[in-house]
Image (tube, rainbow, N blue to C red; front, top):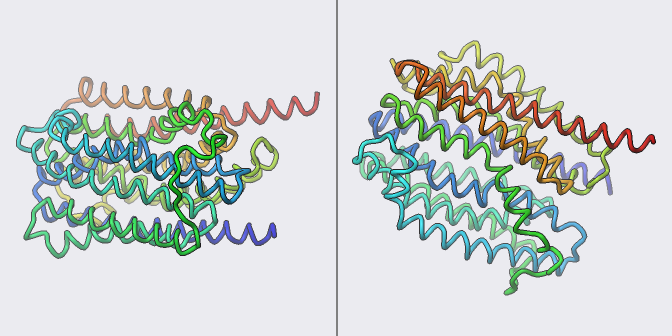
Length: 439
């Protein structure tokens, strides 16, 4: 039985890794189409528009569902699991649905907040596209609950397929209809992809014989201290998105094309985060949760998982740092100032790539033990230091033609400092337990 569980976990990690790799290639195709199709101002508009709904989605749903959902399933009966999943689904439907509708109406205001450095015309374009994207992230929020339920059952095929269709529809829409709908085709493609994403995960859930019950906050034991726990885990898991959102805001005050260059450099610099880092972390998290407070076993799981992350990420980081300009020229149609800005961001982001990819795994060690305080402190410190560094260097210290370096160094500081703090806290926790066991 143990061997079978290990086989399922390994297969799940491989499937999720392949899916992330496919999604990443489709994302690169999408980015190439955006850069080659639209003007620098319009491509900045597209990436800024994505950032607004992404901020709320990853803050409240995307980066929190699995880490809240899975630990609370432990010890529940089959009936209670269905009740809990159903309650969770209805909660997301109601609360994130209301938030999405509110943000849809307030999109013009949000555009002025998230992209303050843009001209009013560009902000209006950001607002229009963001409205489409809020519809897509609402559908993705529902799909994420079904995906978490499937993950708890060690069923990974549909979870691996759904993101490919989502990203594929955006890229395909750009490729086929870019001359007909302008930047709005990005929104149409995102909506089509999100609908397909939801159909795949919900269909797979119901095909396993599961159902959705008309219940609310059941079973009661699984909802004890839910909101305080939710608040802490939201901040822990959304730190990356918060940091990137503030950086996009800073970039909107810099040269035309800075938002695009920063987004491309950052996304490419973190290209193994979803392929390796998140895939390994998501695959290891059920094992870490089942070994709650069993620190010797968790340490073995942590070291084994981290070994594979460094094995894949360290060589890739070296190659990408050395050939950063050539890689950007090969993948995108950037030139002149946009190429130079993207190269600076890509270089400083990718040299900290191995540390970045380990962060999701390190965070899940704490979350598996219901410790949301320790990673909260580490996240706050690294986030504040990195964002302050980026803002000061880009907006105050560096000349305008070099201001993008401030954002690049902000990425490096966030990744490196976060790794140091998480490792220090984990070492201290394990060392303290080891000493207590030998007293």
